[in-house]
Image (cartoon, rainbow, N blue to C red):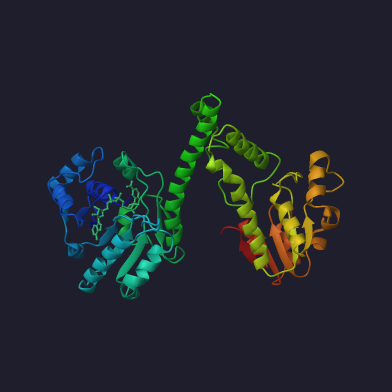
Amino acid sequence: MSQTSQKISIFGLGYVGSVTAACLASRGHDITGIDVQADKVAKINAGQAPIGEPGLDELIDQQVKGGHIRATIDPDAAATTDISLICVGTPSTASGELDLTFVNSVCQQIAAMLENSGKKHAVVFRSTMLPGSVRRLTQQHFAPFIDSGKLSIYFLPEFLRQGSAIADFQDPSLSAIGVFDPAQEQIVREPVTHILDDGIAIVELEAAELLKYSCNAFHAAKVSFANEIGRIAKGFDTDGAKVMELLCSDTRLNISSYYMRPGNPYGGSCLPKDVSALSHFARSLNVAAPTLDSLLPSNQSHLEHLIKLVEQTGQKSITLIGIAFKNNTDDLRGSALVKLAHALLLKDYQVTIYDPLVSPDSLVGMNKRYASAKLPGLESLLKTDLSDAIPAQGTLVISKPCATLDELRPLLNEQHHLIDVNGWRELQTLPAHYHGLCW
Ligand SMILES: NC(=O)c1ccc[n+]([C@@H]2O[C@H](COP(=O)([O-])OP(=O)(O)OC[C@H]3O[C@@H](n4cnc5c(N)ncnc54)[C@H](O)[C@@H]3O)[C@@H](O)[C@H]2O)c1
């Protein structure tokens, strides 16, 4: 991180704003804190933390005495600074909707301040807001300043946790900044660069906004999952904490990025059956497990999303490249692609399948029974030659790389649509219309 001192105003001196003020001041920046609550402002000016957070009193006292932080209720004080950080609350309305009243009023104050100022300025939103909020607020309040090149806008989500906020701020577990257009943006442009962490990820505004919510939703999902496993364990007198401790000790499949990439719905012979059995078991113990109960419906929703994407391409001939439930297997049991083929056939689509690992002659046992029950005409749909599987016009649903780009390229043209199910981004180089499943 660059050490150049910046003049920074911080709107909102609550948990995020006061920690940010103290930490940025301790890095040598000159901080003007602005809050509508005069008592918070007075506390800071008296060298006290306006909220309870370990270590914050000492840090604020030090920085106020050193002349690096002053607080005020006057929003125009931001005029003397180069950057405004917006850290005001974004509560929920009574109906659960996001309430942007405080952010809106700060934007109005900053816009009024900019009207009367000749200086360049950067506005950095830190308040947690839903995707699209920053772009909308910018259009609503700041369009003329953006057009004249006087203002730049960023969204810098905050990931600190109350109770360890100072340590989290100084050594964040994740840093990303949202900009209008990551391809164009020279983010690393004065003055914002001086408050950014080294190696910060630069993404588009909406991705940064969603990232913050995704992290919190993920944390909530983890807590709910652990609590449900705990309740189930308690239901038959075993130690749920031990089960979760062991689960977490697997850092290859469990606590890792494995299974954390959007892609095809899960399938196979284990996940759907075992999720179903565990939900059922919880019910038999009279244990509520709504998170577990939601896993199969969530998977079904993802399959429906894939079906809709296929339909939206407007083609009647559909080729599935890959039909097994994952790469390097011929197992069709629980495969989302088998379900997709079945759903499309019911809707009168012409379906062909190319998957060199799957041949009706070699399918045995449960795998064969599953295939015959779910896709009775599998033999006639499967093509051994890629060129027989791909018609002159149609949609390809590519779930695994069982044909190479070089094999696909000569068979495709602008009459073809490609649906990339698992993030094989090089497919975009092929001469066809590319559609990502979740990107
Ligand atoms: N608390 C956390 O741990 C945490 C962590 C990460 C992100 N966030 C997000 O950061 C944002 C702020 O959270 P917080 O916990 O610090 O909120 P908070 O309620 O503690 O503080 C918000 C402050 O904004 C002030 N304010 C309201 N309108 C204002 C205005 N027009 N001008 C100046 N100040 C104004 C309020 O008086 C208050 O002091 C929220 O969007 C929150 O979701 C919070």
